[in-house]
Length: 413
Ligand SMILES: Cc1cc2nc3c(=O)[nH]c(=O)nc-3n(C[C@H](O)[C@H](O)[C@H](O)COP(=O)(O)OP(=O)(O)OC[C@H]3O[C@@H](n4cnc5c(N)ncnc54)[C@H](O)[C@@H]3O)c2cc1C
Image (cartoon, rainbow, N blue to C red; front, side, top):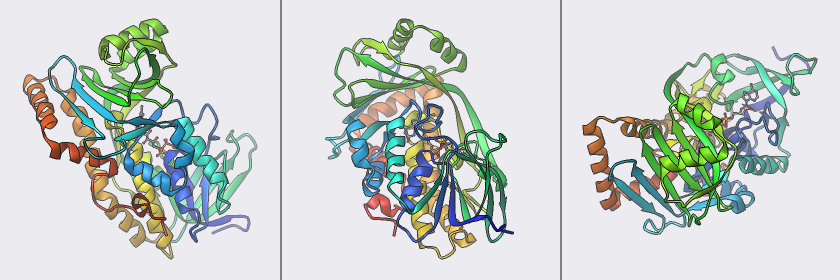
């Protein structure tokens, strides 16, 4: 089946976004032959993973990046979250969580996605053991009991005379995002639920220092997160109904700033400057299974979450960390038992984090008086409950289950 000109590898990773690039790095230095295929150049303005967003990294993700040697490239660009203040707009319920109370250096770190992309890809460039095709796109995939056969179109433009490469792999990893082609080729369906909300993402400057305080405000239209950046600005993730999102994005800077200030209030001071806006429709997408024949899913290809709790990438990074460890140790990394082991060991964290995030969206979306009252009572009680705060701070390390070696500061093999 493999033609004379086919490239043979152990592991083909499709998608070199945040999760796929991290997985490739985790596999560097292992005995496996790894090929990473990414459609868009990491520094391109069109890169869908490393765009203008920022990502809140938990302490577990920082540990993974330290172990992979990426953190020194990120540290100077990371805003430190020393405190999180949560409030319910128009109601009394509020709570705060501080790093010092939890005996932590920080509750998390806010990193621009572009910087994350640069750091990961610079680190990849220093790993001769990882073969890379970029820009190059997976265009067809056949999965057989003993191998995966990939057709890869080289260059930016498909069907414009660019060369095609055939790759034979023992396993193909779907790190190609929520619309995963690999997942579809493997016949794995994804359950998709539209939240009918749009996240408007923007950086703002204000006339007060952030002091490392992050805010999560639950409004009638959805959560509004304001997170401190390393350069003194804030990044805002403002969840709105689709038509309202369209309206605010069309406003000029000063009207946009005024609308945001009205929804958020004055805790961060006066908004003095507003950056470019980008919007993201929000859906929960959950693959019915993380594995198929010679195929395995990580990150958004496996599950894509509402950004309310800033957990999507953190969860995907733990997928990558555990998968790297399991594939590195397996004589045949695509054998069914190996892939089933991965799915089983990721189940607790995956189920827990999806349920936690989705539950939070639904709890705060309800304006039923009983639910609103319970929610406020809950926030007030949470404020008084050190155990509950400790549990929340611990989410930074995952929901439980198997802790990958990289999260414990150990190399994958
Ligand atoms: C507004 C917003 C804010 C967020 N904030 C946070 C946060 O604070 N913290 C957090 O943990 N998470 C956050 N997330 C979630 C996070 O962005 C995702 O979990 C993350 O992007 C998943 O990365 P990924 O690599 O799995 O997928 P993607 O980012 O979708 O990357 C997929 C990659 O695959 C490539 N690709 C696709 N198809 C092909 C193909 N056929 N061939 C080759 N390459 C291909 C794409 O070019 C891309 O580079 C947020 C999400 C949103 C929408």
